[in-house]
Length: 320
Image 1 (cartoon, rainbow, N blue to C red):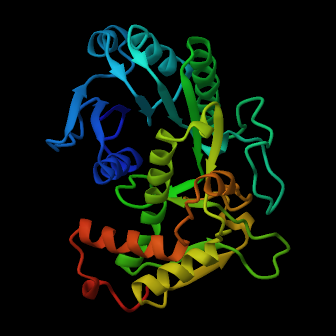
Image 2: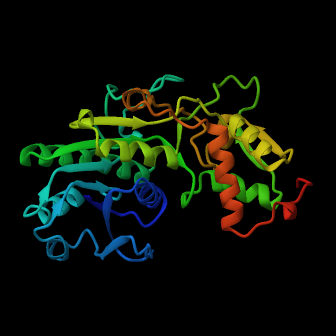
Image 3: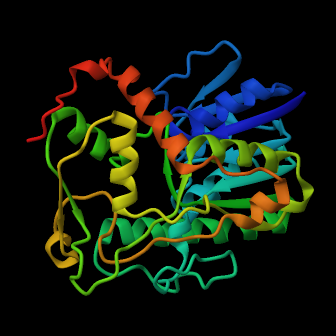
């Protein structure tokens, strides 16, 4: 039975990944996190630890043997250094880092970026929080690849596009869900004939991302490689509205504004640039097809209603 250590794993992608491994079987799963969201599953061992506490990490992970470590919450090169130092006396065969597709340099319009696309060479301008997050993620990637290569540990880096689905805590699809449930108007970019191109985005469902990550555990051809996780559809705000309208059975009240008018609005995705990535490489290598966007998002909508105890019959049919 394979011994798997998961750093993070208490919510969203990490939690769905644990569920995927449990369904698959054949693994002894240990989850390390800060204990704020306990997993509460007798089939999963839990280690409560702040990964940024080097001393505590060294004690918790002393001289262990792991077939694989999957890291969902490394945000900086220091996070990688502390983890690898804590595992320095352990036998580690495989390390998988969950990064982000945002580490690529700016793309041209409507051209999905492959793994060969140029990476950022400096922090993103503008939003310091997001720019810093992306730049630090790239530094974490480089630290992980360098340290693992130096110690002879196989490594793989996965870069999800816009990820959605069960347990999502980020205000992406839930931004729309909340407005639909409240009967509010939804403002999106895309006024016809305003002279600007409508941005498009690549998505990946958390279920597909979890299945592909699990596939990497047993796939030697992924060693020393980076892969995008991104379904092939190009999704616009208009596509999202169509999907949510069909899923909810409601003709949504939508106001379309020009890109310029939406630049400073708190909407989920940038109105002035596309975020398109190609996830074809790992799909072709694994033989695993991505779930079509509509089906996965409809499943997400249903789970959201159940999780929040909402009866769809209580949702206002008249839009404000």
